[in-house]
Image 1 (cartoon, rainbow, N blue to C red):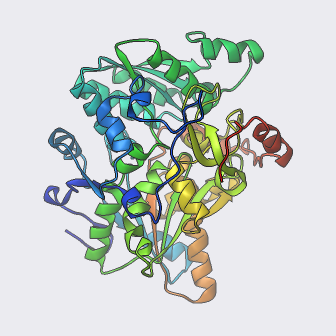
Image 2: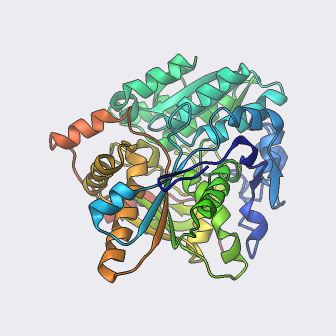
Image 3: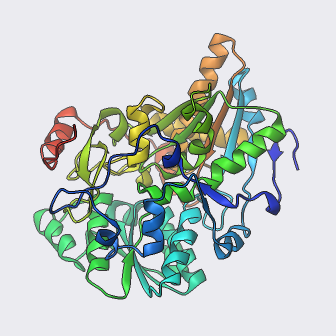
Length: 455
């Protein structure tokens, strides 16, 4: 069904397969390396942390990976999500551009994260896993995984970055509603957490630290596996239901995008929207521009190095080649907690390095300016993470107005901000600050990179 504002698909049009962009890359992505030996890892090296079903998806080379029926059944509770034409925003901007947004806030937990959470928990359940450990920043991933674990009857422990644990009490409460145990990270529950607290008892924490805690937890228990909400190939794979649906919905609108936009922290929501649209471009055909929007305070794509680094602070995870600010990097406590990660997904990093994805970094106040303008024009309050995509979409629409161009803009509104209203209250009170991470602090963090040949 379609009208000039909302474009909907029916259940029969939910994708039956995830799209694996690795099959269409001109060369294989650089392999992950063992943290001890520095040699490429195999599936068995990942077995202590992940079930084999997840590992096989991580290294998959097929272009399409079938979605298991129990996962499809769970998707049918909320998919397909709507695609909206932002007429109100277009009028407010007086732009000739046509602006569309795919609304992943229309899920049970209010974000795109549940697309991968359901898939990962199902694959763990298939192999008899009884407990999962994970980290979360702003709480979207923790909420989604808690929801999925409750659905499949698996216990969950969440290490929530301390600054978000304190800033976002309702996301913490939502995880507990779904039955998860939630602790602030760094915590006294792990050796990694105790080590960080000993060095800095007042630390705000980081996703890298929380990952170290969750990985240590999972590696130390026979009944537990680890689950990650972004960055790795299998997570990006699961999110491609977003872009596949959006392609069909834009066909209903009779449009094709000139630019595809999303916010990036680890990269999963943007990859989910953008990767299906990249297929033609990877074959050498003309296609849209791709813009990844990140925070100026955690600029992994715009200021990070493309090299091998640990995914966590302590150095427990495999080394992956990605754009990184250094695994010891601890970003400031901005409200876009889901974007406060030191590295970018290896696949997203490779595409950026090859010139297929542009990157832009936005300061916090301009992001909230855009979020409020969008909410007043469209009625939906964006999550602070998604507001980075809104900022870039508005900038593109203004550029189209100034150039007198009719431009089709598509972006992913990957989560609602109804549990982030405390941040908006601080914005209106003038209590938020812009923070651009000093170059010397980034250089200091990069000094600790592992020494790996990347030629």
